[in-house]
Image (cartoon, rainbow, N blue to C red; front, top):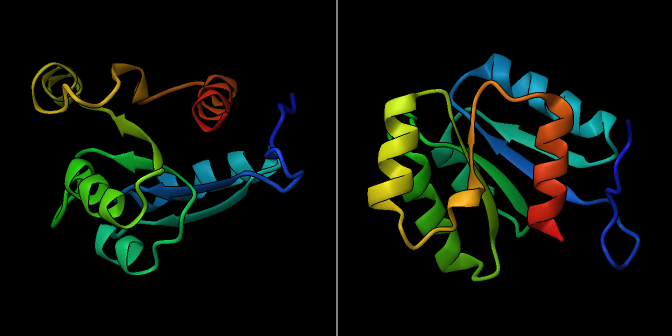
Amino acid sequence: MMTETTDLNGKKKKVLIVDDEPDINTILKKVFEQNGFNADSYDDPILALENFKPGSFLLDIKMPEMDGFHLYRKMKMIDSKLKVCFLTASEMYYERFREEECCAIDKDLFVRKPIENEELIKKINTIIS
């Protein structure tokens, strides 16, 4: 099922996936591209930050060297209009970060892995819109 993936100017919506698991990156990149997005992915948050361009982002929370929240704060300093969705497979991290560390971040921006492809695309389209 294709969902609306163009912005107000008719351009393809962009998404960047940052997850330390290469297999997750490959799968998510394919899912987004099959649904009409321009998608890039990184398994290294440092490289993602170095190559940062404004757009929408999926960030894994638990990554070595720099967690998703630290990466988000650094990117937000560069692009104040940054739109993001946090991914995590860990119940502990999901609950802790939702309730304590990121109370300033909308709790609807957190997604627990695994997630159905259609549900993820729908969520990202909602965040981008």
